Every structure is written in C-alpha cells, then in structure tokens.
Length: 67
Figure 1 (cartoon, rainbow, N blue to C red):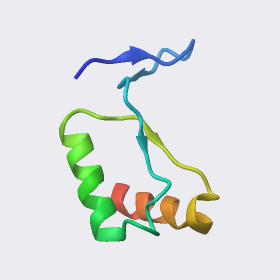
Figure 2: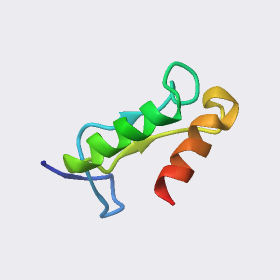
Figure 3: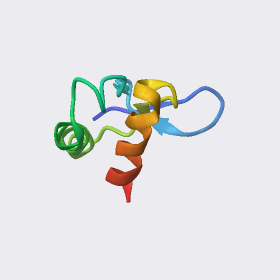
Figure 4: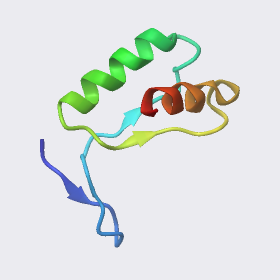
C-alpha cells in the first residue's frame, strides 16, 4: 500500500479513504467489521466517519471494532 502525508500534519495515510456512511444502516455491524478488517489488512488507515452518519451508529460500530 502506498501512503501520502496528510496536509502539513506529517501523518501518513492511504490515498483511498474508507467511507463509513452506510455502517449501521445498509451495512450491519458484522458486515461493517468485515469491511474494516479487509481494509486494514490491506494496509488501509484512513477512515471517514461523522456523528451524523446514521445518528452516530457508524461511529459506535467503529469504536467497538477498534476496541
């Protein structure tokens, strides 16, 4: 996987960001975790989320997955 520097932060991120807008709606928690596992196993480290994605369910799923 290739990485790029995120702005002036010095943080190395993958050029492809994983969007999580459908986690907790179209993708249930098991599917979301499988997607996150696959993405990170390939070296992905840039995940887009927001507290408005499915009333915060997306962030809750990601938090449990990270734990």
